[in-house]
Image (tube, rainbow, N blue to C red; front, side, top):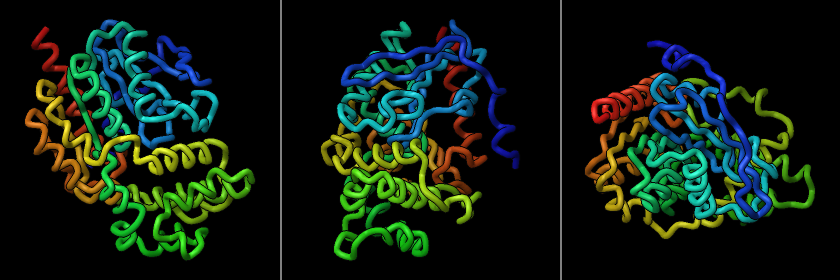
Length: 324
């Protein structure tokens, strides 16, 4: 099988970039890449709390797509880094619509993985008339059962060694609800406490995300930098508040996607966002195509997943060309 890099399009640079003031003290970094006259697509990064990077530009044929990438509130190159105030799912949905208007896209393809898939669904259900299609990977919808699987009991049974390290910073009485317990540490006034908690929080995800390249302990030792602290704080902030979504909302409201075609790419052995959620969404969304990658976990960089994602973007572009 080819390695991930050979499955992607060649590296490109933005032809336009800027910052958007979205209120609440937040400034979003955004960039446009590819063909200025191409099919509009917006890439939604994961986390919540990570950011987009050069590799994400390479999922789309630069000759056929006009690619918008941006860092969500408090993430990456957006400022202020790690800010929790005025940072909710509803704020981010509004930001995507602001960026659509800024770039003049009438309708666009929305591409998101993991938390990016959550945000893509929330946006598409709020603004279905502005979405030409959806490509989702490693679907997460924020249901209580999904959060409990990864932060209470489920993944912990598959990775007991990593789980023991994850809960080690917590008092025994706190370990029944690690999300809430980590909130106390990640919002501490003591930077050393925040940094240690952020390292433990992100290590748990890093050790479970992929079937192919597990991080070595030496690469995970030590305190976290500012970007890692921001990532952990924002992710925990969203999970403490249950993503500001009603229980089961994104599956229950899948009828809003009735006129939107979509492809779901899901790793069979994804232990971060197990396939049952992608299956439930697919059953509730008749226009979706579900591609289960038999030899993949959660990471978008696994070759089978990358291949399926690039195939999906090419298929969508070909369909748009036929319609045009």
